Amino acid sequence: MLTSDNRIFIAAAEDPATLSADGRELCMEARMSNRHGLITGATGTGKTVSLQNLAESFSALGVPVLLTDVKGDLAAMSGPAQPKGSIAARIEELGLRSKGYQNRGYPVCFWDVSGAQGHPMRATISEMGPLVLARLLDLNDVQSGLLNIIFRIADDNGLLLLDLKDLRSMTAWVADNRNDYAITYGNIATASVGAIQRALLRLEDEGAGAFFGEPSLKISDLFRCDGSGRGYINILAADKLMQQQRMYSAVLYWLLSEMYEQLPEVGDCDKPRFVLMFDEAHLLFNDIPKTLLEKLEQVVRLIRSKGVGVYFVTQNPADVPDSILSQLGNRIQHALRAYTPRDQKAVRVAAQTFRTNPAINTEQAITELRTGEALVSFLDRKGAPSMVERALVLPPEGGIGPLPPEERASIIEGSPLGRLYNEAIDRESAYELLAERTEQAQREASLAAWDRQRAMLEDAERKNQLAAQRQARAEEREARRREKEAQKDDIFGNLLNSVARQTTRTITNNVGRQIGNTLLRGVLGGLFGGRR
Image 1 (tube, rainbow, N blue to C red):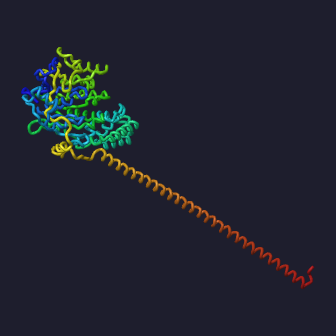
Image 2: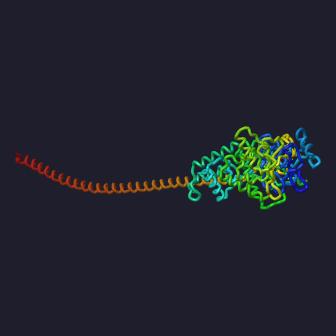
Image 3: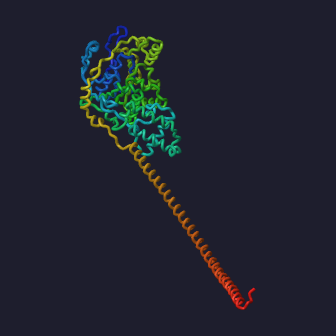
């Protein structure tokens, strides 16, 4: 709902004395709405209505919006409101019909990290980056340093990290080759590798695998307007996502980072180019590492020059770090309860964040606000915060509450973005390339082992051949030796035989002669009587 001078009609001023509308319109300057904002208040005091009011106002101004729906009660703004009860009374009290108020729906586009309640919202591991991923995995400083090394090695080797299986494969590859990388990139501790692998398994078990992959979200697809020039309200279903607090915060960090990195500088504009609205913003800052907080602070500070406004919704201003709180120029404060000393301190802190108005006791007013009332302070045309005012928040023009599943499904099916994002893509990346390298390394290792075995067999065969040759030569030498000995034996034997034959002949001749002589003598002696 806009006034003619390009201001966002947010609320009507309320007389603190009579607690009734005094007729003044409290508006946010459109050209100052990219200076960010904060909506705070206890549960049930009207924060969601203020959030929806702002979203519809930006949409009517032609500014696309992305907001997180943590309770599932923002989807009905796609259709017209059906005022009744207190909302109908507020419309009548403020005379909104005569000021252009009408019941109408707004162009919406549903997104969901899991893809169940909207188009799948995805990001690649590389786009998420090691800093946010370390927060998501709950890594300590040493493990975060190793994750940086893994990303650096992947970049240096042209390996795309798109989904969780890519990062798991890359982590295992670095661990297996840590000795080769240690000199160039630093020490790679096995314990840290194990911690990262366990964290990745836990993350996958929690269902985060659906978020990482392709096609990843193109920021330009959020910057859409309908045929009448109204900006689309992109609603991210977060009722289940916020149950995984680190995952929820990581998605929001990524959205901020992508906006900051991809959008060009535009300086001061008559109206923002885009607005991000984060409910349950305290989840972004719970246990946030110092380095990530510094990065987030820098992004929030500089992203306004890109024409992007950021609005945080949480229960208490103390939920937001001071370094970021100081950059939130537009404030809407709903009621806070002050039953305990701690609650009372929180109320004092909240009151001190406003510019003082002498007509209002801010600290007291915060505890007295009714549902649908708020203390507001917006930046004026010169960028200075206005004095705090007690106000009646305008009712939304769109429906309030959840949307029937069949109506949500119909809107999702009719969206032209479905053909771009509904089907996941798994192209060649680190997982496939490293699997190929591993297979090639295994083949090379098998060939090397076969070569070693063949060399061993060939060496053994050569040794056997040499041994056989040596054996053959030894046998040959032995044969020659035996042959020579045999020859010697033959010569000696022949000699002995010759000597023996000669001796035998000699002895035989001698014996024969003797025998002959004896016989002769015997015969002759017998004949002649000469025997004795």
